[in-house]
Image (cartoon, rainbow, N blue to C red; front, side, top):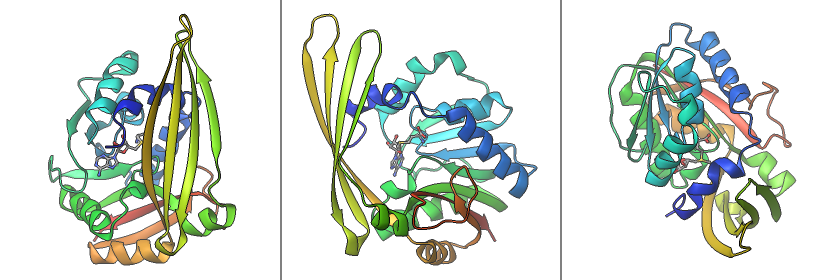
Amino acid sequence: MVFEKYAQYYDLLYQEKDYQGESNYVMSLLSKFKPEAEKLLEFGSGSGIHARILANAGFKVYGIEKSQQMIDLGEVSNAEIDNKENFSIKKGDCTNTYIDNDFDAVISLFHVFSYQTSDDSVIGMLKNAYRQLKKGGVLIFDFWYAPAVWTIGPTLKVKRVQNDEISITRIAEPKCSKPKNIVEVNYQTFIKNRSCGKISEIKETHVMRAFNINEIVQFAKECGFVLLLSEEWITGNQPCDQTWGVCSILQKK
Ligand SMILES: C[S@@+](CC[C@H](N)C(=O)[O-])C[C@H]1O[C@@H](n2cnc3c(N)ncnc32)[C@H](O)[C@@H]1O
Protein backbone atom coordinates (compact mmCIF):
# COMPACT_ATOMS: atom_id res chain seq x y z
CA MET A 1 0.00 0.00 0.00
CA VAL A 2 1.25 3.51 -0.80
CA PHE A 3 1.12 6.34 1.75
CA GLU A 4 1.58 4.01 4.72
CA LYS A 5 4.94 4.31 6.56
CA TYR A 6 5.94 7.07 4.15
CA ALA A 7 2.87 9.11 5.13
CA GLN A 8 4.25 10.28 8.48
CA TYR A 9 6.95 12.26 6.64
CA TYR A 10 4.63 13.70 3.96
CA ASP A 11 4.11 17.20 5.40
CA LEU A 12 7.85 17.57 6.08
CA LEU A 13 8.71 16.42 2.54
CA TYR A 14 6.27 18.99 1.12
CA GLN A 15 6.89 21.78 3.64
CA GLU A 16 7.77 24.16 0.78
CA LYS A 17 4.53 23.47 -1.10
CA ASP A 18 2.42 26.60 -1.40
CA TYR A 19 -0.88 25.21 -0.09
CA GLN A 20 -2.29 28.70 0.53
CA GLY A 21 -1.50 29.82 -3.04
CA GLU A 22 -2.95 26.59 -4.46
CA SER A 23 -6.09 26.97 -2.36
CA ASN A 24 -6.43 30.56 -3.61
CA TYR A 25 -6.17 29.23 -7.17
CA VAL A 26 -8.92 26.65 -6.49
CA MET A 27 -11.09 29.40 -4.97
CA SER A 28 -10.53 31.56 -8.05
CA LEU A 29 -11.69 28.66 -10.27
CA LEU A 30 -14.72 28.15 -8.04
CA SER A 31 -15.66 31.82 -8.17
CA LYS A 32 -15.40 31.70 -11.97
CA PHE A 33 -17.17 28.39 -12.66
CA LYS A 34 -19.36 27.83 -9.58
CA PRO A 35 -19.67 31.17 -7.78
CA GLU A 36 -22.46 29.99 -5.48
CA ALA A 37 -20.37 27.00 -4.24
CA GLU A 38 -20.56 26.36 -0.50
CA LYS A 39 -20.26 22.60 -0.07
CA LEU A 40 -17.13 20.84 -1.34
CA LEU A 41 -16.02 17.23 -1.48
CA GLU A 42 -12.29 16.52 -1.73
CA PHE A 43 -11.06 13.21 -3.15
CA GLY A 44 -7.64 12.11 -1.83
CA SER A 45 -7.50 14.90 0.76
CA GLY A 46 -4.27 13.49 2.22
CA SER A 47 -3.19 15.34 5.35
CA GLY A 48 -5.99 17.85 4.70
CA ILE A 49 -4.14 21.13 4.28
CA HIS A 50 -6.09 22.44 1.25
CA ALA A 51 -9.31 21.23 2.88
CA ARG A 52 -8.60 23.04 6.16
CA ILE A 53 -7.63 26.27 4.35
CA LEU A 54 -10.87 26.10 2.34
CA ALA A 55 -12.85 25.32 5.51
CA ASN A 56 -11.32 28.37 7.19
CA ALA A 57 -12.30 30.45 4.14
CA GLY A 58 -15.95 29.52 4.84
CA PHE A 59 -16.57 26.43 2.67
CA LYS A 60 -18.12 23.29 4.15
CA VAL A 61 -15.54 20.63 3.18
CA TYR A 62 -15.73 16.83 3.33
CA GLY A 63 -12.68 14.73 2.52
CA ILE A 64 -12.34 11.15 1.33
CA GLU A 65 -8.89 9.66 1.86
CA LYS A 66 -7.84 6.04 1.66
CA SER A 67 -4.71 6.21 3.82
CA GLN A 68 -5.45 6.24 7.56
CA GLN A 69 -1.83 7.31 8.12
CA MET A 70 -2.37 10.46 6.02
CA ILE A 71 -5.58 11.26 7.94
CA ASP A 72 -3.77 10.76 11.28
CA LEU A 73 -0.81 12.89 10.17
CA GLY A 74 -3.20 15.73 9.28
CA GLU A 75 -4.84 15.66 12.73
CA VAL A 76 -1.47 16.18 14.40
CA SER A 77 0.58 18.31 12.02
CA ASN A 78 -2.27 20.57 10.89
CA ALA A 79 -4.02 20.93 14.24
CA GLU A 80 -3.37 24.67 14.36
CA ILE A 81 -5.44 25.27 11.20
CA ASP A 82 -8.11 22.68 12.04
CA ASN A 83 -11.78 23.61 11.68
CA LYS A 84 -13.99 20.87 13.11
CA GLU A 85 -17.16 22.78 12.24
CA ASN A 86 -16.40 23.04 8.52
CA PHE A 87 -14.12 20.08 7.80
CA SER A 88 -14.57 16.37 8.28
CA ILE A 89 -12.93 13.40 6.66
CA LYS A 90 -13.96 9.84 5.90
CA LYS A 91 -11.55 6.99 5.27
CA GLY A 92 -12.36 5.41 1.92
CA ASP A 93 -11.60 5.03 -1.73
CA CYS A 94 -12.67 7.95 -3.90
CA THR A 95 -13.71 5.57 -6.66
CA ASN A 96 -16.64 4.31 -4.57
CA THR A 97 -17.03 6.06 -1.19
CA TYR A 98 -20.29 7.98 -0.78
CA ILE A 99 -20.97 10.92 1.53
CA ASP A 100 -23.88 12.93 0.08
CA ASN A 101 -25.51 13.90 -3.21
CA ASP A 102 -25.65 17.68 -2.97
CA PHE A 103 -22.08 18.91 -3.42
CA ASP A 104 -21.47 22.08 -5.44
CA ALA A 105 -17.96 20.97 -6.35
CA VAL A 106 -15.62 18.01 -6.06
CA ILE A 107 -11.91 18.81 -5.94
CA SER A 108 -8.96 16.43 -6.19
CA LEU A 109 -5.54 18.00 -5.89
CA PHE A 110 -1.84 17.17 -6.26
CA HIS A 111 -2.02 14.37 -8.81
CA VAL A 112 -4.60 12.19 -7.03
CA PHE A 113 -6.17 11.63 -10.47
CA SER A 114 -2.84 10.29 -11.79
CA TYR A 115 -2.84 7.71 -8.99
CA GLN A 116 -5.88 6.17 -10.73
CA THR A 117 -3.93 4.06 -13.22
CA SER A 118 -6.61 1.79 -14.70
CA ASP A 119 -9.52 2.91 -16.89
CA ASP A 120 -11.86 1.32 -14.33
CA SER A 121 -10.51 3.41 -11.46
CA VAL A 122 -10.61 6.64 -13.52
CA ILE A 123 -14.21 5.93 -14.49
CA GLY A 124 -15.00 4.91 -10.89
CA MET A 125 -13.64 8.23 -9.61
CA LEU A 126 -15.54 10.29 -12.19
CA LYS A 127 -18.82 8.41 -11.67
CA ASN A 128 -18.44 8.72 -7.90
CA ALA A 129 -17.99 12.49 -8.30
CA TYR A 130 -20.97 12.64 -10.66
CA ARG A 131 -23.41 10.95 -8.28
CA GLN A 132 -22.44 13.25 -5.39
CA LEU A 133 -22.59 16.53 -7.33
CA LYS A 134 -25.66 18.69 -7.82
CA LYS A 135 -26.66 19.19 -11.45
CA GLY A 136 -24.32 21.84 -12.87
CA GLY A 137 -21.72 21.05 -10.19
CA VAL A 138 -18.03 21.02 -11.11
CA LEU A 139 -15.12 18.64 -10.67
CA ILE A 140 -11.69 20.32 -10.41
CA PHE A 141 -8.61 18.10 -10.58
CA ASP A 142 -5.01 18.11 -11.75
CA PHE A 143 -3.00 15.35 -13.38
CA TRP A 144 0.29 14.52 -15.10
CA TYR A 145 0.05 15.75 -18.68
CA ALA A 146 1.39 13.09 -21.06
CA PRO A 147 2.93 15.39 -23.75
CA ALA A 148 5.11 17.03 -21.09
CA VAL A 149 5.91 13.86 -19.16
CA TRP A 150 7.34 12.25 -22.30
CA THR A 151 9.08 15.44 -23.52
CA ILE A 152 10.71 16.40 -20.23
CA GLY A 153 11.04 12.76 -19.18
CA PRO A 154 10.88 11.50 -15.58
CA THR A 155 14.39 11.48 -14.12
CA LEU A 156 16.06 10.28 -10.93
CA LYS A 157 15.59 12.94 -8.25
CA VAL A 158 17.00 13.40 -4.77
CA LYS A 159 15.20 15.50 -2.17
CA ARG A 160 16.61 16.51 1.22
CA VAL A 161 14.59 18.05 4.05
CA GLN A 162 14.98 18.30 7.79
CA ASN A 163 13.45 19.53 11.01
CA ASP A 164 14.89 19.72 14.55
CA GLU A 165 14.60 15.95 15.07
CA ILE A 166 15.21 14.22 11.74
CA SER A 167 16.80 14.71 8.35
CA ILE A 168 15.33 12.95 5.32
CA THR A 169 16.93 11.98 2.03
CA ARG A 170 14.47 10.69 -0.56
CA ILE A 171 15.57 9.15 -3.84
CA ALA A 172 12.88 8.94 -6.53
CA GLU A 173 13.76 6.53 -9.31
CA PRO A 174 11.32 6.30 -12.23
CA LYS A 175 10.60 3.30 -14.42
CA CYS A 176 8.62 4.26 -17.50
CA SER A 177 6.14 2.51 -19.74
CA LYS A 178 5.43 5.07 -22.46
CA PRO A 179 2.93 2.96 -24.45
CA LYS A 180 0.78 2.71 -21.30
CA ASN A 181 1.46 6.30 -20.14
CA ILE A 182 2.62 4.83 -16.83
CA VAL A 183 5.56 5.80 -14.61
CA GLU A 184 6.48 3.66 -11.60
CA VAL A 185 8.25 5.94 -9.14
CA ASN A 186 10.35 3.95 -6.69
CA TYR A 187 10.87 6.03 -3.56
CA GLN A 188 13.72 5.07 -1.27
CA THR A 189 13.59 7.27 1.82
CA PHE A 190 16.30 7.46 4.50
CA ILE A 191 15.33 9.00 7.83
CA LYS A 192 18.17 10.02 10.15
CA ASN A 193 17.55 10.74 13.81
CA ARG A 194 19.62 13.90 14.30
CA SER A 195 20.34 13.31 17.99
CA CYS A 196 21.48 9.67 17.92
CA GLY A 197 22.43 9.35 14.23
CA LYS A 198 20.32 6.21 13.70
CA ILE A 199 19.14 5.79 10.09
CA SER A 200 16.00 3.94 9.01
CA GLU A 201 14.83 3.24 5.48
CA ILE A 202 11.41 3.09 3.82
CA LYS A 203 10.66 1.91 0.28
CA GLU A 204 7.41 2.67 -1.57
CA THR A 205 6.46 2.47 -5.23
CA HIS A 206 3.96 5.03 -6.52
CA VAL A 207 2.47 4.13 -9.88
CA MET A 208 1.39 7.21 -11.82
CA ARG A 209 -0.57 7.60 -15.04
CA ALA A 210 -0.21 10.52 -17.44
CA PHE A 211 -3.16 11.68 -19.56
CA ASN A 212 -3.81 13.50 -22.82
CA ILE A 213 -6.63 16.02 -23.02
CA ASN A 214 -8.54 13.88 -25.54
CA GLU A 215 -8.58 11.01 -22.99
CA ILE A 216 -9.98 13.39 -20.37
CA VAL A 217 -12.68 14.44 -22.85
CA GLN A 218 -13.59 10.79 -23.56
CA PHE A 219 -13.67 9.76 -19.88
CA ALA A 220 -15.71 12.89 -19.04
CA LYS A 221 -18.24 12.12 -21.77
CA GLU A 222 -18.58 8.50 -20.68
CA CYS A 223 -19.39 9.63 -17.13
CA GLY A 224 -21.89 12.41 -17.96
CA PHE A 225 -19.57 15.43 -17.70
CA VAL A 226 -18.53 18.12 -20.16
CA LEU A 227 -15.01 19.55 -20.14
CA LEU A 228 -15.12 23.30 -19.38
CA LEU A 229 -11.41 24.02 -19.27
CA SER A 230 -7.91 22.55 -19.22
CA GLU A 231 -5.04 24.85 -18.28
CA GLU A 232 -1.63 24.74 -16.66
CA TRP A 233 -2.00 24.26 -12.90
CA ILE A 234 -1.72 27.64 -11.11
CA THR A 235 -0.50 29.78 -14.05
CA GLY A 236 -3.59 29.22 -16.21
CA ASN A 237 -1.36 29.02 -19.29
CA GLN A 238 -2.24 26.89 -22.30
CA PRO A 239 -0.90 23.33 -21.73
CA CYS A 240 2.20 22.59 -23.80
CA ASP A 241 4.93 19.96 -23.88
CA GLN A 242 6.57 21.62 -20.85
CA THR A 243 3.43 21.59 -18.69
CA TRP A 244 3.77 18.67 -16.27
CA GLY A 245 0.68 19.52 -14.22
CA VAL A 246 -2.60 20.32 -15.95
CA CYS A 247 -5.83 21.26 -14.21
CA SER A 248 -9.16 20.31 -15.79
CA ILE A 249 -12.65 21.38 -14.84
CA LEU A 250 -15.60 19.16 -15.70
CA GLN A 251 -19.27 20.05 -15.27
CA LYS A 252 -22.11 17.66 -14.52
CA LYS A 253 -24.65 18.05 -17.31
C1 LIG B 1 0.15 13.22 -3.49
S1 LIG B 1 -1.01 12.91 -2.23
C2 LIG B 1 -2.00 14.39 -2.27
C3 LIG B 1 -2.68 14.65 -0.96
C4 LIG B 1 -3.38 16.01 -0.88
N1 LIG B 1 -4.40 16.14 -1.88
C5 LIG B 1 -2.36 17.13 -0.99
O1 LIG B 1 -2.49 17.94 -1.92
O2 LIG B 1 -1.46 17.21 -0.15
C6 LIG B 1 -2.11 11.74 -2.98
C7 LIG B 1 -3.18 11.30 -1.99
O3 LIG B 1 -4.22 10.66 -2.70
C8 LIG B 1 -4.67 9.56 -1.94
N2 LIG B 1 -5.34 8.65 -2.88
C9 LIG B 1 -4.86 8.13 -4.03
N3 LIG B 1 -5.78 7.36 -4.62
C10 LIG B 1 -6.89 7.40 -3.83
C11 LIG B 1 -8.17 6.82 -3.90
N4 LIG B 1 -8.49 6.01 -4.93
N5 LIG B 1 -9.06 7.09 -2.94
C12 LIG B 1 -8.74 7.90 -1.90
N6 LIG B 1 -7.53 8.49 -1.75
C13 LIG B 1 -6.61 8.24 -2.72
C14 LIG B 1 -3.39 9.00 -1.33
O4 LIG B 1 -3.64 8.16 -0.24
C15 LIG B 1 -2.69 10.30 -0.95
O5 LIG B 1 -3.05 10.74 0.33
